[in-house]
Length: 513
Image (cartoon, rainbow, N blue to C red; front, side, top):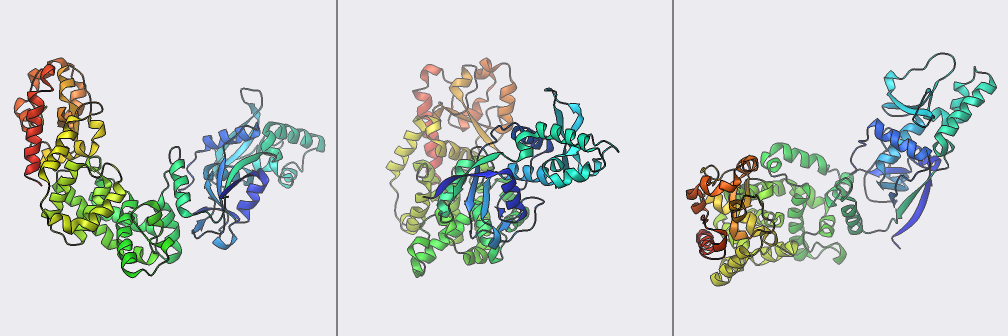
């Protein structure tokens, strides 16, 4: 069994952090909660309310580790528990119960909350002060630690000190008595990294995004390579990486294809460690040495791919038909294939929408057979039949074709029907028949052949217009014709107008394939 249930008591959690037995994988993001979020957590624990479940991984693990913020330094050899989900809550509790961190959390005995109880408050550490005499403010740590409380009240009559302690204990409830148990899911130390990645993908739906890149950051750290620093340097050096909002995982996928080639050629690694493609498990099987030696080459290859896409009219990350296609392009250009051949492959793939499903498998297939396919004649009839089917179908089922047409129209000098100017920059699409009916419909259930392509700025202007019902009057007919569109009545939308659009798009594609 790869996991089991377990509960952590508050005092146990604090001891685990202090002794370095509970820590964070190096890939975890920093503590980000503000003091008010911490107060809400402290109030929930005080009342015995649930605060969710932790996800913990048993050690030892091959990850580099880091301490809970403001906790003692840790080493991998001492860590029994890696905190995968729950960092914010554990750090907040640790700060309050040990009086560490940038803020002081305390009870104000002079100020009551809405229920007539002493208020739990916070102050910046440098700004916290206490009146002389009776301690009307008491730190959370002083309530939960008998020695600290005794020192605080040492000059008070014993009866007065006991009354204050009883009031504080009553207000803090489960938090003060440390009888609060937090349920956890404990992943066993022998769990496969691929399974961990899947778990992170599930957590991503509601939390911080974690993927194989984050795991590789931790796995590579002991090998003297700081992957996160290397990625941030690449982002700083190449603006195009920032402009297209590339994820660092894509660079590792490029390296995975090279690891796959090496594994197939040398057969010098166990079958379970061989890279077969570009899935998460394959990424985790890349050798650290290859990542270190080929990182710069992979960055250069991906930058070449982005510049190639820019030449195909792709203006931003949202206009990339498929990240997997970008990966294939990076490999082909790195291998020295002529750009003209790669461009023909690109537009043929747009027509076929071959990356619409099974994209990772398609990368491997295209890389393996590129030379054979590029040197043979293509089935033009089959290619244009696929194009025709995609144009006549709903746009939501034909994303690759819909997005690919943005670039095709840009490099074909098509015009924007709103302004009459050339299409440039980020491009978006709206349904022409819907617009002629006085409403804005962006893709979705619109037919691909009915889509009118406009700049992002024109779409914003379109949303502000009050005279959509007069669109047939103010739309630029020359610009529409440049996209293969025409102002026909909705009743004719299945006839001449669609045939014209299909014909124009097919003609533009013909010049590219």
